[in-house]
Amino acid sequence: MRKVVAAAFLSLDGVMQAPGGPEEDPASDFAYGGWVFPHWDGVVDRAMDEALHTPFDLLLGRRTYEIFAAHWPHVPADDPVGTVFNAVTKYVATTSATPLSWRNSVALQGDAATAVAELKQQDGPILLLQGSSHLIQTLLAADLIDEFRLMTFPVLLGKGKRLFGPGTIPAGLKLVDSKASATGVVISTYLRSGEVTTGSFAQAQPTEAELARREPVRREG
Image (cartoon, rainbow, N blue to C red; front, top):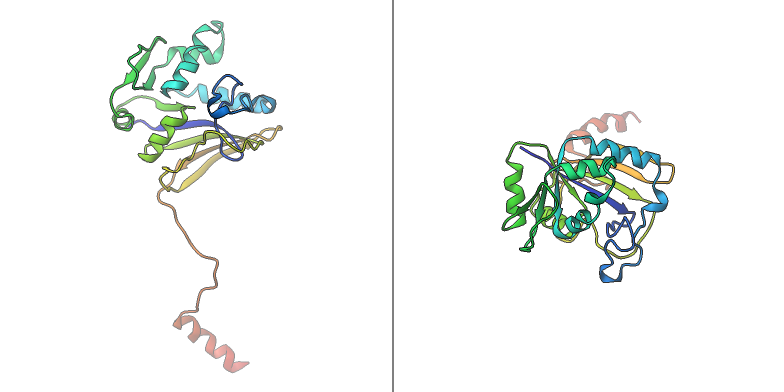
């Protein structure tokens, strides 16, 4: 069975829109495209390199696919990210009839959540979900994401497309890896960990057994 791993660049207030550049996704007049650039350093670079050396297939929404397809096939042949992205299989959730021109691209037919659930039942590497904010909401609502690899940048954007939308199903998570860069980027990996557990800091009332144990102390005093 395959895992769906959601990888995202996040602002501290949870926005994931247009991290790479001003023209990436200006929808709803988003004015801060390229907000990750000032904080990128060697630690972030090495974390990206490690992630790309774990076998994976890409899982993309149509808009992110078009952004990637306009860039990665045209980078130099020795570009490490381009080499990996161009070679792997790209599964694309799309309702468009326009053919997918990037090599090794496969259109997911019908309902995206159903198609991804079927992919998860197959053998193969992880399904790495990059960007694709609309597809992420669909998969969160269907409870299909197994792991989150998040890079949280020290910036507040106020508005924009967010990773966790209203349809997110409550779930417990387990932090399995975390590091911080000198520029303040927190790099974290979370695994699904069952249901949400709750408790209370309110002072609990003593049980009858506890009262009985205290009684001799009161008498002796």
